[in-house]
Image (tube, rainbow, N blue to C red):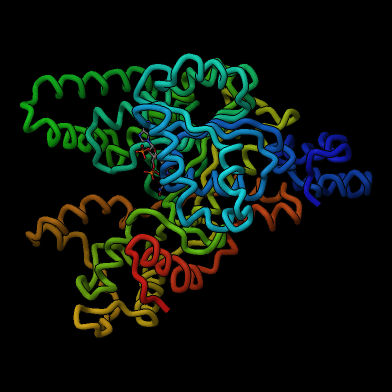
Length: 506
Ligand SMILES: NC(=O)c1ccc[n+]([C@@H]2O[C@H](COP(=O)([O-])OP(=O)(O)OC[C@H]3O[C@@H](n4cnc5c(N)ncnc54)[C@H](OP(=O)(O)O)[C@@H]3O)[C@@H](O)[C@H]2O)c1
């Protein structure tokens, strides 16, 4: 049984959070309790209390017209209908336009089909009772939220999840700084005004860590591991971007600002503008959070859903998928990719489920972060390359298997025959002059030749805290992912069906 809003679950909540409170030593704690008190031990196995935590809560989510937060919203509505309200910050000219985006781009998508089936004719009534579109923009003061709406949210919201970002690797530097870095400052500032706030959740990326070799542990920027004077650095970068805007001719501005971002990122050792500005976003959160309870989530490469609400749901042609699709269509024999690295992929539902568990753990009354400033307890890497590495040679064999079993068809309707994927050495690119592939190879090179592996120790510890029922309902055990099943039967089916809109798949 899950904990719901009944008397017994309320009574159990202190025992329920014992495990969470002692996150680091939960295994030891459990063993101790077995010998001390069998009854108490059984309560520890009642888990974190994810459903109990979210019941009756009000949440503000940014980035919900995007891929990840959409999966998050669907999961909450489907699994925890007891949630009170979810405010969704949406860029729009007015509230009618925000509502239109909510209906078309979020609840009207195929992702929500299970929820639609569950509620039948009352679907729209249900979602509109729970979801509140809020006109806003991460680039504006106070997130661009109208004063009366902001006042209401500040009074009522329990949890803020910031998933908004520009995710373009080589975005204009000024734009990426404004959304990913300064946007973080704006939302932390907003969060500090929220009177009942239990947790601010900052969605970052594993590649923000800058390290690219060996086992990369879950260090925060809080202790100054990476950059000594982060505030000074960020100020200087913002100034550089402003100067570039002023000194560039209009027709060169875009190009110059894109180049500036990439060169500033690489100057400091980050792979691209995106990772650099996300890293600075994390620094801003660490520098300005004060007493605000915060967790930082760092997923690696998020791909289609593994199981929920159904396997293979994805939006947008992401990361390596465009390259793999060209390969499947027989238009590309291979790519610039190291065959022996682990490409760190996590299915979107795994990211969502671990996010919900981490929120319930850290947002629970008894489980406030012990040391909000000095420790790394609040940083989670949601990653697979240490726990269950997907080696590129294996991955490409699975991609080959997928397209052999489910071939693409040429214009004449004949199945396209493909050969085993070829791994090109990055050096080759220097001798090639095909501009598009040169561009793609350069853009992906930090990922396709990335030799680091992201530890997910905290995620594993979090998993230990879940009850059996929670593990079924909020599964995120990356070590149990069957990559063959996922890549051959789920992921590429999903990409071809939902992104490429192919109808002839088996
Ligand atoms: N996808 C991945 O593989 C991956 C991996 C690791 C971490 N992450 C992180 O996960 C989060 C979600 O990623 P995603 O893949 O879902 O991104 P996405 O599909 O590109 O969606 C980005 C979202 O941010 C919103 N946004 C952008 N600029 C905004 C602004 N100025 N004001 C308000 N909202 C704004 C977008 O709204 P519009 O629709 O209005 O543009 C959209 O809803 C991001 O923080 C990203 O850095 C993603």
